[in-house]
Length: 447
Image (cartoon, helix red, strand yellow):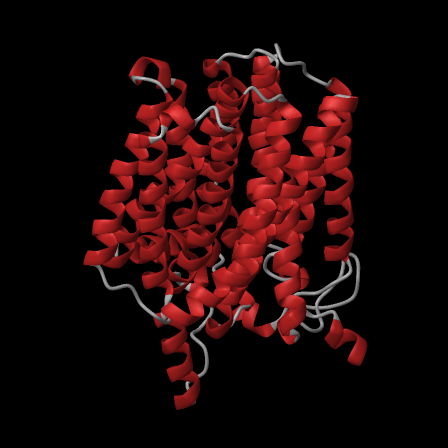
């Protein structure tokens, strides 16, 4: 019995937090490879801004489409293995196979269509893993754990991106892109093995052919038809607070997509660094961001509250955008460039960490994967929108204009944050607690 307790996520808080951390590390591996290392490699080898923007746009596109993933996962799952675990294992196996395929094909800098397709497919599989892990977090984390869990999740993602960016950038420069794909596949494989050896709830199966049964809570909240899923999601998404939260998430995603595109261009064309130099600085910055997310992020959310901490991060990003727009003459200075890369990576992780509990609190647990995915898809759509805008930067006045665009959008987001009161606890958890206290038990299973 003791051994079972040690490996059951629902019964072990440290294990829950560690799993969220390491699964987000695994998610960060293809992000660091396709969002930073590959664009830096392209920039250093003469690819145009339009070509880099095209590859980045295709790479980020699955993250704007992942709302479909949530509907599928809330409707179809193998409950004897838990609500999310089968999806996590399956999506990571697909990630591994695709990365091995990329290693075999080995597209070059001039193979723009192949690079875009590789980025799209690997990130598509990664979005399924992301949605499954997010659903797992909403399912198993207690409200008082969510600020810390958010820090573990996005701190882990940043650390995964950092390690991936630095290592794959170095490997690409010295051994070629195929070796970088193989290295990424190997790490995701190790994390997949860890997931296979654990359970979500007591008594569930490790594998489809193992012994075990579905947990009672999962049977009670599982929605087994499309119409109720759509109805619950629609009712939750059209609530005023939800509608006001969506554009704020869009703005958060926009600066991430824009700064991802701007970084390798400034590093290669203004500072004069090659792909290894750019990816090394980016990787170290992402590592610092991950550590900040694990430490400062969770503390800020607990100490100041999600809304106040998010407002502070918006103000900091406004200051960074204004600084870069007003100091164009310093863009050739390696120290100035390094400051920018560190600053935006740390602020990007911190704003994600401190704002995530708001998204969780707005979710109906019956359709948690779907609703949470819609929120995250909105933020990711902001990143894709930024990638397309970045592709037109030359026609719009160059890179300095991109910082002005980011500044204006963050002013809009800040005004909305200051005007709205978001919840400090999930209303659905309050309802569940009230029902259990009154002896009514959980709500009936939805068919």
